[in-house]
Image 1: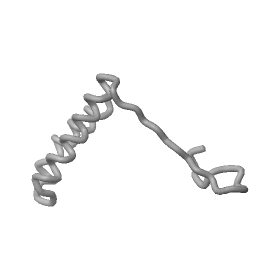
Image 2 (image 1 turned 135 degrees about the vertical axis):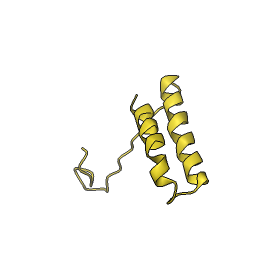
Image 3 (image 1 turned 45 degrees about the horizontal axis):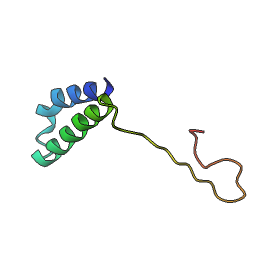
Image 4 (image 1 turned 90 degrees about the horizontal axis):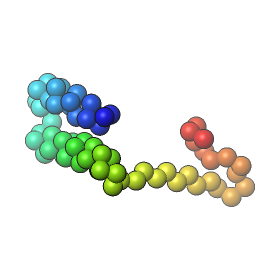
Length: 65
């Protein structure tokens, strides 16, 4: 649902944005948002996050963890 909401917002904002961005930008973002939404909906997508830590460090250099 989130990706479809982003797509709706993108489409609604496009008339204001198209003077600053070309059709290639529009097509790439449209493809990304819709294909990602479809992959999540069909459950054929996975999301991975790998955090690496330098030797001797007890925690990674990020705020997420």
